[in-house]
Image (cartoon, rainbow, N blue to C red; front, side, top):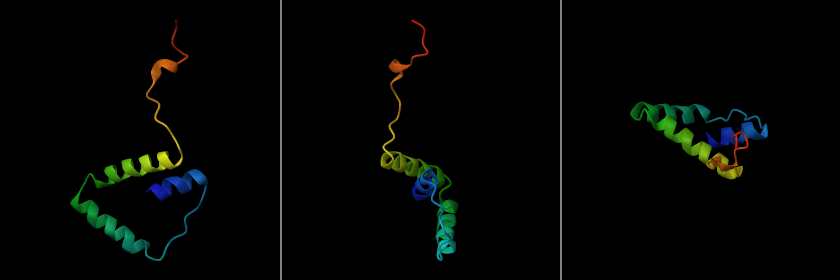
Length: 69
């Protein structure tokens, strides 16, 4: 998933790989055993992509210029 996020960001089109059917079958088997796996994998992939792209979480609201003084 992380690779897909980064390819999308960079505008890179992924070609179909020969073993993609086996790769997807492996994911389907794992997903049948753990219904939350996809969410956890997506969160981790997004965190990895953000790290690679040097994106920071904005948790400081003190710089918000829209608040009236």
